[in-house]
Length: 507
Image: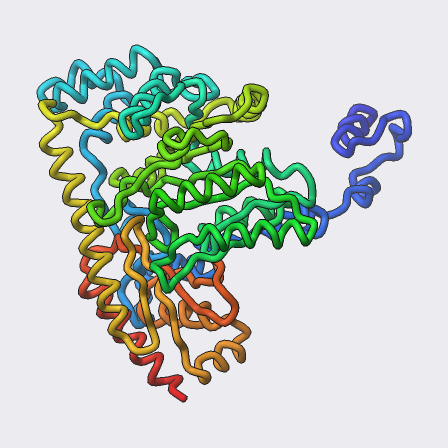
């Protein structure tokens, strides 16, 4: 009995000297342990919203499960996940890049480097052996900052891209770009008055992370009438407004190419944004994960903030993020990415390292994916022709789908859609009737949520309402990916639904 009492006391964190070894029972001490409820956990968790995988996406998975179980009562035979940029997801089925997967397979099972000769191309085997010599088993932890050899490859990629030097010691490999973004935001929120400037519309990772960290989102609005362009004047006005309200701006977030908008910044705008950051002592967080997704690079060239920073000799502290989830890789599930620091003091770099070391290291499978991202096959390599064929096909398909979808959506009554010149999405604007707005209000929903729910219920197409990304008061948008194959059938269903919706709720 005494031993049992001591165990119960330890379980309840009650000093044994306060308990009688003969009288204590489990039922008698249970009242001292409050039940776990949503009211006695970290309150910021309840404030976090992430619409990309929110209620509509959850309902889509419920529909998918019903279809899988043979439910024939639904008015569609499959769910189309147009809510998230997840190219290899079942139903979207973008094929992985062969070279990337060959190297990964060889490192997962190193014996294949010998037994797989004649099956795997020589350059894939050579790459795998090179990485194996540096890493060893991918089942072991790596350096907390990422494998040094891979960080060196990332630095060489950045140097070739920008024409400026890059230091591997300033590069941190991460479990996707999201992990790096969350880490940096948590560093910057130094008080309840701290805020971060974010574009509206934005990728909801930013508002979700700010809510979790107790930070304040400071919105600056993109101009839909000019292809979702960024106005430096809008950013300056947002800073001034925040300061008047007693908010301390800490950083400026720029998503380039834009998510959900697909816009690409020009260099003069980037230079102006750097000047604003310098004037107000802001760090610049450059989300550049879609840098390889440019649909018209001749007319809308993409440049990195690192290049513009170095070209202009700007002193602004910059963190640039990249990922294997987007581009042509589409390796979302492998969780690989990196961020690079520029103009960041050594003491801050040391603190960042300390914090990433708490998590030990990013996944090795993701780090290997980063190596394939920054070191694809070169012309003359055995794998180059296939790699070029695969990546060209992905680029062409995305550009064609984006253009076709925007053109057809713009022909619909009650809808307009700015063409996307980058990224993986379109962000159409809905111009709904008064009756549709009233029906949404009666249902306790915003008009765009009402529309997106109806779209899913009737067609199986899962989109994300604009509310989740942010928009001006009185506006209604939704985001679609351009990843769905069979665009004629896909857009045809959307067109039929939209025309029926507008007819049903006509004024």
